[in-house]
Length: 470
Image (cartoon, rainbow, N blue to C red; front, side, top):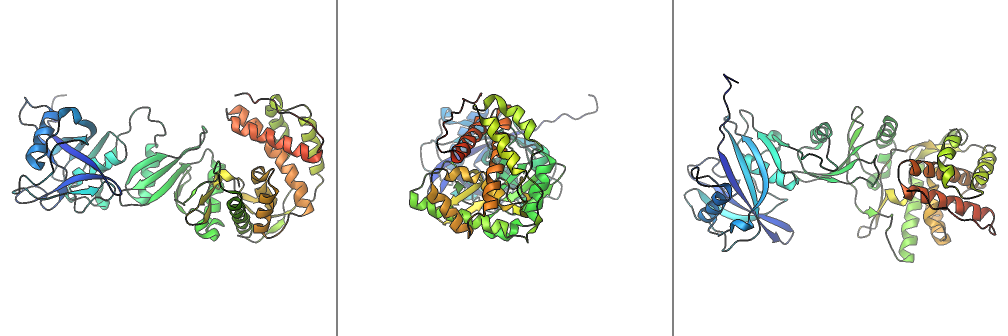
């Protein structure tokens, strides 16, 4: 490699001293002053190695005592972050950031000629101005990463500014839930620097969702759809009828068809799936669910009657579900769907397509209901949105009544008949898909639905559900 200049970067050590504050972790920062680099900017306590005899941990302990007057034991030093930095002037260096949570003494300014202030700041509310290099290390730390590159460009300011944020996180090998590089870049083009990624996917192989927190505040969700159809459906809904729901639904910030990715605003609350409330509170929540369903179905004018029920995939789904069906299930499925073929079609309205407790969020403090996940949204009969929700009110006629009161009307005779047909089709589809993809919850839900519908058709009927293969 003759003719190539090898790097000979100096090595810096940086102290991330943390304590518990009233609103979360706080970090110790000092403000540079006098005839020094980045005077007036906040920075971590830091230093350089004094000769080849001094190792990184020894240098950190020494710099901490000299600059902040506190004594740190080497055994209390924890590796945190490594940053390869280049300044706007072109000089490069390696910064090694260490986390410390125990020390002796009280931090104070020990070198007033180069530091005029020292204080604690909430880790998620860092002060301005701050040296961009230091901010890069803390942003990497807050994001849960271990290594980053921070190469500034000529003309970039020394102090951190979102417009010249050059931080690039280096992912660890085999990181679960790692955000693809191109999706990371897409999201940051939409909302700015993201300092924290949290995997928010469902426990299913095809689910890829992250909660993203911005360097300047704000929270979004970044989602990759498993296929083009789901991406197109969700984007069309979010650009079309969903804004009419107001704050009850997220907003689309950005979409990329090639990546099949979207960036969405965050909504509040917690999923209703698995949540426990007193009966009276449950009725209130289900009343609100009915109101939200009515708002969805009224978000665009109805269109002429939709086509017949989707029976085309029945045989394929039956093939996948058959090993798990109870005796008599297949006959019941075929009888129900044959009757359904003769039912009149219903007018089409916007439907969510996966309207169930898993996709409904409730904020108890705000008394607010939210709906998410529109990738199965399409025009269809309104009764379509009660197929999966009906499982939640099984055995609780008071909850079904609360939904209908919120919805503003009872189901028609035609809707009741089609609800049974669509529920059977959804159950068979769920059993087949769940068995093929190792999702026992879907299999169990489908078998439970079939047993419930058979019992409703014949109250004296006795059936059983064979255990689903895992």
